[in-house]
Image (cartoon, rainbow, N blue to C red; front, top):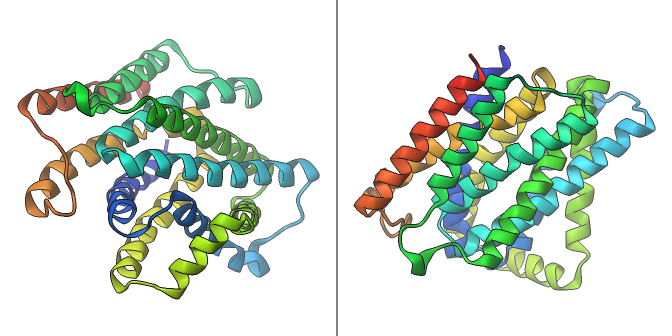
Length: 297
């Protein structure tokens, strides 16, 4: 399973992206659609490799790339909408606990992927652990029902994107498939751009850029592009359901990073860490670790 270390590094990069995303959405970028547009557009950088790796694809493969690209952009919008108003260490695990479940269901239907009993037990433990990580001890600060809805939609769309990408990489060489996927991402970004309200916000951001925005945004994208490329590479090598299950690594890293950064730079990362919450998150992290071990026994 040489795809495992690739996926682990990818999810560590995604944890870094989640932290910088939270700072951007709270401090600098006013609307999730604007951020989803720029992220999708930058993610389309893979199209630059077209002259070197692009190959003709079947209509089914092109359709799979379109589904993957458009669902990913839509997932970003709902994810950033939930993340903007809630703590990263709760929204990210909530999305992540639901995404593997959706992937498992969709992969069994469309990819004929099946898991053994130990792997299913591991899945259950990972989802339980990430749900505990998302739990808020203070009832007044729990995730709002609207945020839960947005997070669930994001998880479903991320799962659709992953399963469609796995189908694409199964039927097509990885490099060429990634370029087709990049074209779809750019097209999805253009759809966001041509929505009048979004276009006004995007032009406003371009006309009045902040130096701070640029620096943090490109740092976020450095993490995100690294994670995106490596996750797609892992998907081309391993089962979609198990690649997504490894996302538990991201939540453990996010948990530890927010504890550290909320003490070093509390004006940037503001996370609640009462003793009860630390215990809950420690238990959640342990459940994720045990679940991952069960999956790969």
